[in-house]
Amino acid sequence: MDIGDITLCMGLGVVGLMMLGIPLVFVTGSVAVITLLLTFGPTGLPLIASRIYATVDNYTFASVPMFVLMASILERSGVAHDLYDAMHVWSGRLRGGVALQTMVAAVFMAAMTGIVGGEVILLGMVALPQMLRLKYDRKLAIGTICAGGALGAMIPPSLVLIIYGLTASVSIGDLFLGAIGPGLLLALLYMAYVVIRCRINPALGPVASDGPVLSFGQKLAALKSLALPLLVIGVVLGSIYGGVASVSEAAAMGVAGALLCAVVRRCLTLALLIEAGRQTMRTCGMILWLTFGATALIGVYGLIGGTHFVSQVMQDLPLGPIGIVAVMMLVVFVLGTVMDWIGICLLAMPIFVPIVRDLGLDPVWFGVLFCVNVQIAYLSPPFGPAAFFLKSVAPPDITLQEIFLGVLPFIALQIVALAALLFFPPLALWLVG
Amino acid sequence: MRYVFNKPTIWVQETTILLSAICFVISGLYSLERREHIRITVLVDRFPPRLRRAIDWFGLLLGLIFLVAVAWGGWKQGWAALSNWDSTKTAFDSPTPAILKPLIVVSAALMAVQLLVHRRQGLHW
Image 1 (cartoon, one colour):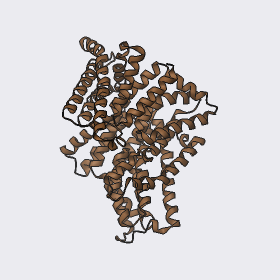
Image 2: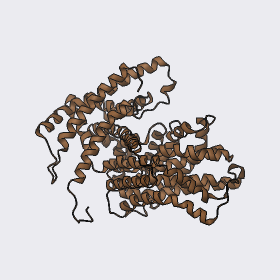
Image 3: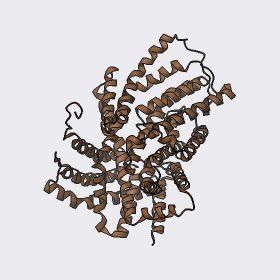
Image 4: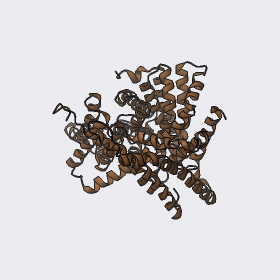
């Protein structure tokens, strides 16, 4: 069997087993072990344990549990809820105002936590009932929430960027700098879309006519609840951008800031800490063991010459560098319809990023492209996690089909942003170095 | 520390690595016990129960293959690191390898046992 056949077998094996609902760790891990046994025999087995050790023995990885812990503390302290309410005061009497408010709140929440699942669920519980009550167009409301929630993957500090940085050995600080512009651009695109749709057809986003009219002073007072979250965001991103702290240190400061938030809001209890700790442990177990399986698979694949093979195939494509990157993005897009981002990042990026480097392109820019693509993966059917998250908290008469229909225009906007970034790299790179 | 005393601490970084790495390795067991590892259920949920049972057995087999391979392959390194009390050979010289390498073996073995226990209890993933 030559390397092309082995690649095909492994690829089909992984995708097929995944579709059977077997946990991804065991799919990638067992395919790695079987390939290893068939090619090198039992002498190769210690490789897997060594790779696991090399993975966990890494200072930057320590930022993952810190950021997750920070997010779960902030989530439990009710900061996000207040944030949403504060935005409401300012959304005023605009057409589609509540949708815009939701989007702005989503951006702030993304900068605070960056966990898409938590964000979509929270917005689904807070913003969706309000928009439905005001007789917003249901699809517009759904799309706004899912797309806004998915921004958590893009706006720093995002786990997607951290894991990408780790697998591709790219500076995470640079990635954070590169992603912030395109992330805000996406948010602006979504908001422009909402405004335009509501202008064409005002029935889509009625004005909130109830509720008290607030004076400017009262509005300003409502902004006070923004102070703490902004402080946390400022501490985390400021110390990374300012070059004062490494990503892990900044994450630890974020946890401290989140604890401070909880103290000020008088909800720092032992129960909250234990719950947040458990949540962190569960998320880490999920992410890390998946990483173990994937590094085993990629390690074995590299050993048998697979990485080299793929890079050869890619470079033989009759396309320019941008064309090759576009093909890679297409692969990620297709994988994204069925697969979780972390699986794609861990499996495809170790193969793609060296090719990108060989082509003389910037891996930071590629990381930002990947990140936009992850947004699409979060929304795209049949396996769009954001849709499932929303379904779990939406009223029962909202079907999964309706959710997927609602996110379609937003997917189109994301593709527009992706294309813009692809052909115009400075969009992502103007802040970096 | 680095800025206030103008002297970087030698213990923070390595201790952080060791503690979070321990947490990473053990957390897999916790997620497994709660059956929360990422999997795709869209298709499987529509399969008839008999087929799902067969897939469960098959998945169990795959899980065992991976975990046993990790434990088996890591055994020798783990034992060597533990019995020599390997350390990082840095200024702080923490015993990271001596603790982590055996821990990976033990966690993988325990996860394999946990899989069998779930099977006995007749639980899906």
